[in-house]
Length: 271
Ligand code: ACO
Image (tube, rainbow, N blue to C red; front, side):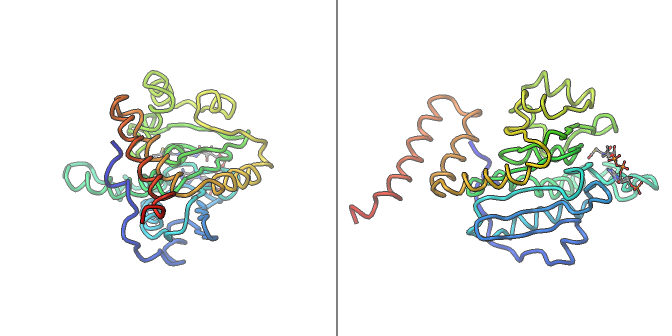
């Protein structure tokens, strides 16, 4: 079943202010039903800090209720070069040494919240990936429902090469998309997957020339918004739980969702 804590839009929180977003290296533009989140440190290839992940979580908590599509994009030549490596310098003082396992667990869970909201059913999330999507950047693209890639996109799960594991929610979608053996091969070699291979593996749904990326994303958003919002949310709930469900469970889930749809569409007839 879908995870309860990502299944519902939380009580709307206060939107992060300009200063908080700037510190996080993020930009947020909301235009009616579409929110665009831009990773906005192009001079650092949109490398991400703890503030970035907290900022993403804050955006997720405060998303206006009428937003139906969220686009994640990166300013400049790359989507994101992953964690800001300067955080490792000076012995990585900002990092826990893991000695207090509970505190470290809470800390990482808080950062993961920057990613998990992207699976909420009432929104469809689209990553627009050009250039590098490395480590935490690759995981951010994986956290989205759909990836549109430019033909210069390069995906790399770098964490094991740095002695770490991917812990920003990426292992689950990666395995869901490519299966365990391919996920192992990609992670344990930390090799780079180019756009054409990404398309073959299902890591990108659409690949377009670099100059056409914005147009391709815009066309996709238009198509997504043309579908009934309630049906979209119900279908997203169904599709994301399908891999975990037995056929019987999935059939039951389909019936439940369809009853909800029928009530929404035709309920006024009986009232
Ligand atoms: N953290 C901090 N700064 C970065 C990062 C990063 N992850 N990536 C790039 N930058 C900086 C560079 O240091 C450089 O700064 P400078 O202009 O002061 O020298 C600037 O961004 C531009 O980077 P270049 O390397 O010059 O750009 P290029 O386009 O040639 O290469 C690439 C881009 C391939 C992304 C390269 O910068 C790179 O390999 N970065 C490191 C990627 C990495 O290992 N990330 C960690 C992943 S693991 C995780 O996310 C948990």
